[in-house]
Each structure stands twice: as C-alpha cells, then as structure tokens.
Length: 182
Image (cartoon, rainbow, N blue to C red; front, side, top):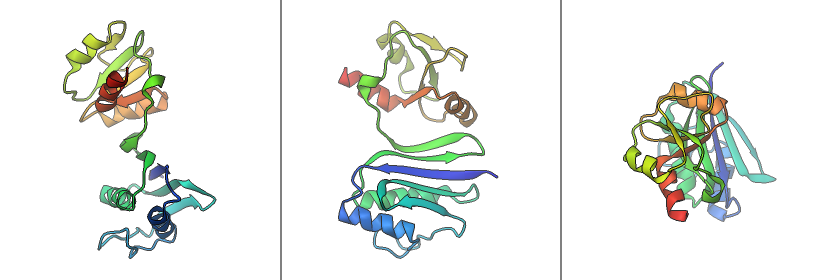
C-alpha cells in the first residue's frame, strides 16, 4: 500500500516550545498552541517519536492525506522555534520527495569531474555549466550520472529514479550556496 512519510530531524528539540509541540504531535493534540485553528490529525496517521531521541520525528499516512496537513505540521514546528537538519515528505507511490529543509555541507560536494544532470527549470543553467569547467553535463539521467542539480518543476518519476540510485541531489539554491562558500 502506498504511503506518505514525513520526517523531520530537529536540532533543538530541548527548546521548551519545540518540546511542547513535539509532545502535542505525539499525543495527536490538534488543539495545542503550536497549531493553527482548524488543524486536525488524520485518523490514519502513524507517529514515530521517541522521547529519548527527540530530534527524530516521523509520521506516516496513506497517500490520500492532503499535502496541506504536512505543510501545516512543518509550519507549527517552525512557529515553535524548531531548527532543522532536514524536513521532507516521501511519497512511496511516486518515489518522489518534497523537501522543506535540507542541510548540505558545501565542503562535502565535489563538482569537478562529475557527471551532472540539470533537472527541471533552472534560473541560469548556462552559468552553472560555465562555473564547473571539469564536469560532464548530461541532458538525461544516465548510468554514470553522479550529481543532480534540481530546479523547479522537476519530473517526479525521474526524481524517484534518482533517489533509488542514491545519487547526490542538491537544489539550484544549494548549488549557489556552495559556490559562495568556496
């Protein structure tokens, strides 16, 4: 059966407001202060949160749950003051991700010599290609693709295949952040 998996890796779960919001999520308390009026937990939500490991939160639901639920959940954590390493939603039906936050260490990404796929609508793909002189830029996903730079409106089926191959994926914004850090 297909499902949606929301996962958040929280850097400051000990902050009082964040801890309160996480507890409200674990207990499915839709009326907690961190949630907006009208917020409700779907009956089918499965929550994995360990009070002894409060930095990791996971919720799983059927794919029929609206995206707005997860967006509201993310915004509730943000309003409580949560800081994240990652926040993402995986759709097992399509193999695609929606990413709210993802921490990338610019020092860990190597561009030179890579086979790079530029996917989706990018603001300035020509400048990206000019900045990375020793890379092979590809028009489609190939067996030797090693890095993917993702823009807007990327094809979810291609993203799913990229994820299955466990390739390095960064957004265009993260690319520019890496270029500034170098």
